[in-house]
Image (cartoon, rainbow, N blue to C red; front, side):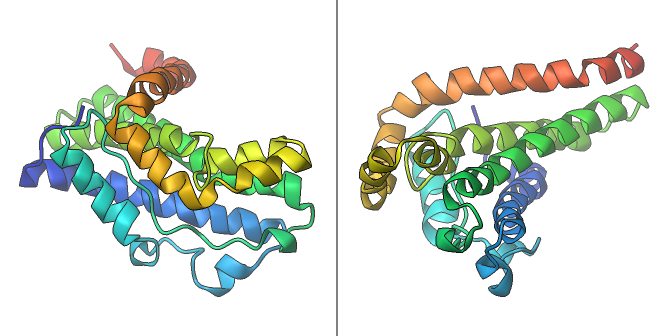
Length: 222
């Protein structure tokens, strides 16, 4: 649960959060370019400049609303990267990889922050600010990873599910996209996503991160 909104807490969370959002969106654009669609690249969205990815609703409004609602999870999203799926070489399959690129980048970043946490402790760097930042890096990236995998468009999980479903069902499922934002928002405020999606999947991915970093922990932890 994220409950501390002091200036110090904001400073600790700012860097990992900015990287989590920016790399997530840039990864979508990069993957789209690799699979044949240059739309995001030509619009300057394959970049680590966070200003290119800020969305007034997903990056600002939703997090503030969740804070005011005392939500146990503080999540949001950046400005969606434009992808012309008809430009992809194999649209139905490539769409899945493009959608996975964002959450995949968050998973890799969570591992990076876990490694960073282990190393600073292993080298005896007892700096609370760095340790807290490493924890925040894991927290934000796991949160964004799990939230964006929710299987409803326009989230990445919805794109992945649309690519897996048979064509007719995928077309019908895609018709939910104009209402997807409102459905997700409603599920967030009723606690459905937090209880039945965010909590169990976050625990699952944190367990994977711990397993992958356990050899390094055994080396650097006294």
